[in-house]
Image (cartoon, rainbow, N blue to C red):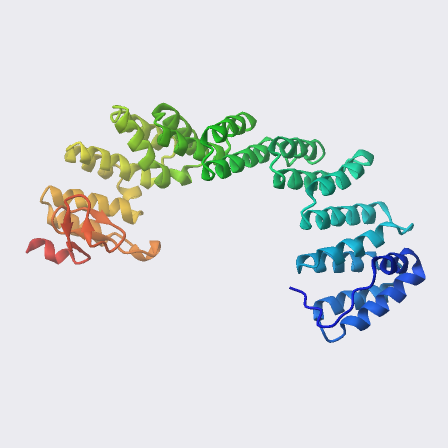
Amino acid sequence: MFHHRGVRQAPPGVVRHDLAGPGGRARAGGRLEAGVVGRDDDALTLLTKAVRMGESSTDAYLQLGNLLRERGHHDRALQLHKGLMIRRDLGDEEEKAVTVALADDFAALGRIDRAIQTLEQLSRRRKDPEVMFSLHRLHHRNGDYDRALSSLRDVGKIDKSYGGEKRAGYLASVADALIRDGREEEAGNYLDRARKEHGESIPALYISGMQAVKRGDLDASVRNLERLLEVDIGYFAEVLPCIEKALFEAGRFQDLERFLRDLLKRNPGEARILTELASFYEKKGEIDEAVRLLEEERELVSGDPAASARLASLYLQRGETQAARRMLETVDTASENTDIYFCRVCGNVSSAPLSYCSNCSSFDTFTRDYEKIDR
């Protein structure tokens, strides 16, 4: 907060008069400067700049008003910016900046409708992306998401970087907020619109997939999450459990093999996918198939600690202790900045020092010392 500590606020009329003309600006700056000397370094810097710049001090006063608003002095900021508006020497960019600042002042005072009206008046005279984006923010703050989207479209007509992807991201964000507010059906409508805006929207696909799991729409969940991974495989580890859950509950667990193989075909260098495919065979009891799969990609496996540890774990389950040791000797755990732990009972592997093995329900069985396997 900006603490005045005895600084007197000039009456609104005085501020507006002082800022109206060239000479008045310097006098106003001098009085305001004297009022805050030694009291607030930031304000002092801005006021000193205003005085020194003379006729070109609009920016300094504009920033001072913004500073006052940011520190909670909304009325003073509004009066300062209103004073700037009656100056006759404002250029187009200065008029725009002051108008946007005025709208921000009204919004800070809770007068959102007045803030919107202020910007709409300017927008009717000139199509400016900054003004339109400010309108977008205000409509969103007002809870009018459709008008906010419309303003975003207006921005995109001028600034092509604000295209479908950004609009989809906005709609997905609205949906996320609605979900947290318990308005899931309404959120679903916004997610549908988001995916129509941009079929590869990561936020829209991610939230759509997760929501579909919650409501039991398993086909939609798999469809959206698969599409997400086509766009960005980096979400693989995060969404795989949801895909597995959806397929399992839909009685389609065998489809996981097809899904993982398709992913691996599109991303042949992803050891994580290879490891999960081996894990799938392991869960089916097809240990030999899991080993064969990993051994066929020995070079890829040796470069990934998790894949190497998975293969070592499979060797352990086949009783091939020496092969497991040789495999682990190739693991460069330092490159991943992590440790590999294994369960002495079942060979389950983890990157964390767990105290409970979810695979065999054993406590205190994880270790880093493979020598203990032989005992």
